[in-house]
Picture 1 (cartoon, helix red, strand yellow):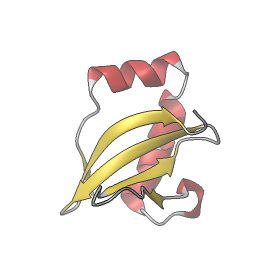
Picture 2 (spheres, rainbow, N blue to C red):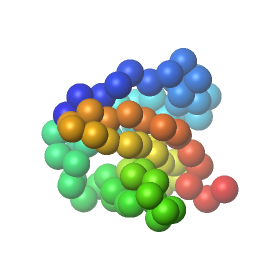
Picture 3 (cartoon, rainbow, N blue to C red):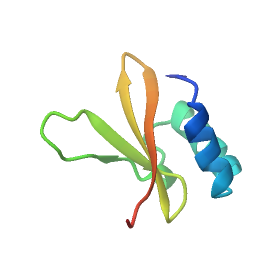
Picture 4 (cartoon, helix red, strand yellow):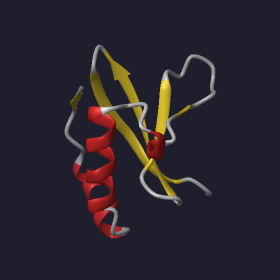
Length: 81
C-alpha cells in the first residue's frame, strides 16, 4: 500500500496530542497488514462514504479512504467526541 503524505494540519494535530510515534507505528502496521488486530479497522457507516478508520490509540483514530492500494488519511479524530 502507498500512503499519501499527511497534510501540514494533520501533522500539527499529531504533534499537539503527542501522537506522532503512535501514528507511525500504526501506519506501518496498516501498510504491512491492514487486517492487523491492533488496528481495529472499522467501516464508517454513512451512505456511500467509502471511509474507514483505524486505531492510533484507545482515544484517537485515523479516518481514511483507500483506492487501488493508495491510502489517504482524511482526518485524525478523538474517538469519543
